[in-house]
Length: 460
Ligand SMILES: [Zn+2]
Image (cartoon, rainbow, N blue to C red; front, side, top):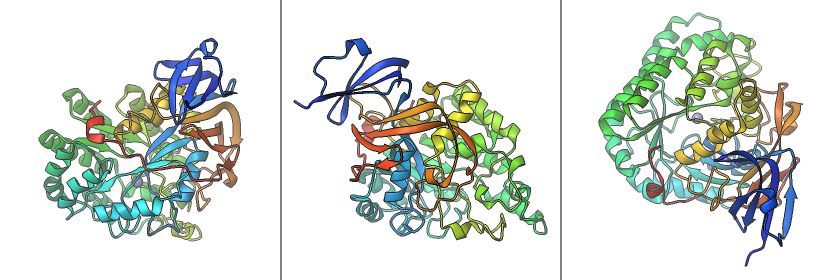
């Protein structure tokens, strides 16, 4: 019999609420969650975290690991260590920015090879839907991707083509047959091309110019088109990184109609505001763009109402020179914000101010992303039978973000210097301590999370 271990805290975040409890772990799994006084005798080890909260290990359903092929931007080792330091225990890797892009089974196998022995947390992959890979969709599902990702606009990098409506129509019957979700970067090129043309002579060192070049209507038009396709093809639609709150009424109507659609927010849209982005500060460039403070509050309202289901990082690192910091031009700089190691404090700081609880955080950042990725039978909850994935989170400590806390490959960040609340003390992956107070487990014990997703995934 494997020996039992107990993890205690006054605030264990379970699906039934936040309570004082002992989480009993047997091997890699949670055996049961009991009141501290009901802890069975003969524990091999008891760890009491006192006032620090124990949350389920976070799940990030939107990460660009860039490996294989662009490991100089990031890679499995650095991304998964930054994840462990940020309280994440499962990452779902996006199919682009790596080479080859994950658009066929051979590319998925190359990714598995790149990941082998180099992961500090668990991972799984999204497959890509591009112009011409319709015949690869079902084989990718068979081979174990969690679902698919496509772009309605040029993704800012060659090697992963965008899809126009007719190409999407060719892909959707295949996607629908897999039962897996299709994640979509929802911006239409039309409004963006038109706005950009108008801004040819504008000052691109100013953030406002970039913001005007990506109007909310590009997102609204894309979401409207996607909801129509969702109605027609009945596939599971997931809108990644919603930025324009103007789309929320459409999404509300889609929900009441019963369409299988889910929506994601990102820490940067929930924390940063366009008004405060300094001149030349291209670290803040991402697509869709960070919008106004007023828009940010509407996104929080969307989370409160449940129209936005989850928070994922869209951790999208690059070589520092690609941010063109010296030049400070918002037109030529790479769009993407890296945040794996700081997302939890960023979201917690904002959520707490607005009266949200740790249960909300666990739902947005663990349970719902795990559901999206078809891993919700084993990941994203502190409950019997689940993987013993935890983050020990000290909600009371405050800190100023400095580069030592970033851990990913290139320690540049739009959040440096920010006052944040909440510190990740320790992260446990399937019962193993993988991160504690700035140090990592010496071996890489992360592995691919492969579940039988088609049975596991139910629309919720
Ligand atoms: Zn992304």
